[in-house]
Length: 449
Ligand SMILES: Cc1ncc(COP(=O)(O)O)c(C=O)c1O
Image 1: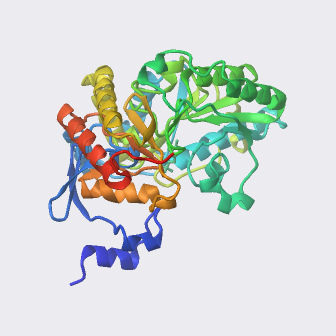
Image 2: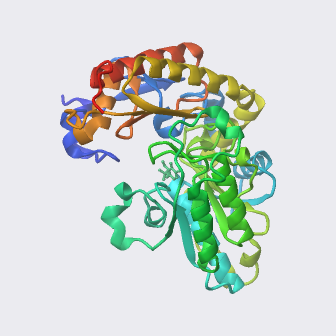
Image 3: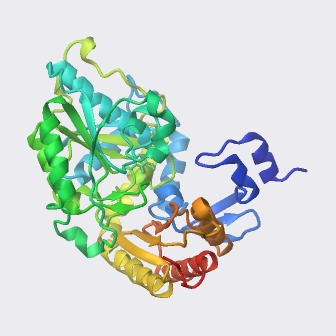
């Protein structure tokens, strides 16, 4: 009998994985999950320090969400969302609008983060067409940004790692400089960091110069997660949003990774006191249990789309507004708001910050570390001739798995983004296992710089 891994390697094409790496790090068969833990086929627990690609909010298989999903699936599995509606979709939209910064009117559902970005780009563009603002058809984006990998979203990615192969297929975008606060601390989030940075000045000058051609600016608030967890400053974000809105450029905030508590507030935009025109959400929207995304639209943004059928927004995804995913979303949002999770975030973030300091004090290979709420990043410096070379991330990931923790470093940047529900005891384990991982791959500190 072939094993599950052998069968997998025959038929599956995994995302973000080189075929040749399977020999070194084959996929791990997971049979169940609970809380912050994944369990492999033999029952070995693995601490999920990255919330399975930044999705899990309350921990895996949270009973409040699984109960809501079970109830929903027994009642209404799916119904097409054109011409039909249901309680779960309406209830979730109402709850999202109530929880978000004031001023959102409608919600458009899709099924993944990239699709949410596509929806926002297309609504912004079509709104200009419908209002006769025909020159405004371009998009601005930030250096080092990531917005997904469908062609529209990819065109807005700043990082060449994702876009260079497909560059000939991508629409042009105006790129803006981005500050990088390599030693950002959580306490910095409450200030106005980056507002007067040279990057902010240059970004604003560029926006002013191109204002008449731009329909929207797409931005990841505070943390560019896929961009090695670069932290860009509350003040930079505030100034950028205020400037774009003053110039009549829509702001599309991509909170797909940072929404739902990751930054220490329910939404990252709250730190800057701004209300972007579009708020894109996914990942933690369902608590991390089912694929769903949502675009919250500023009040009045739908106005140009009323009137004859030629004004309608021609965009649909088959599973838009799926009732089970919406029920999961509502249960997750209720748990965040009603069960004290958001109020508990400062305490959780402080505990994570103390553990990070513990790692730093034991690992001289760490050149910089930064924190924004429940996101921690450690940037290591390695000797040029280190045997892992460009595969440092893979070497660290494999070592972490040997130590029973799921880390997925972005090359030289090891990060934590655990479920918000992580306990003090689990944070202690995470600290110990991260230290062991770094020591195993980089030695205990004699790093040649
Ligand atoms: C900021 C951001 N935007 C968009 C996406 C794309 O989401 P998805 O992978 O669900 O398409 C991601 C995924 O990591 C993301 O981090």
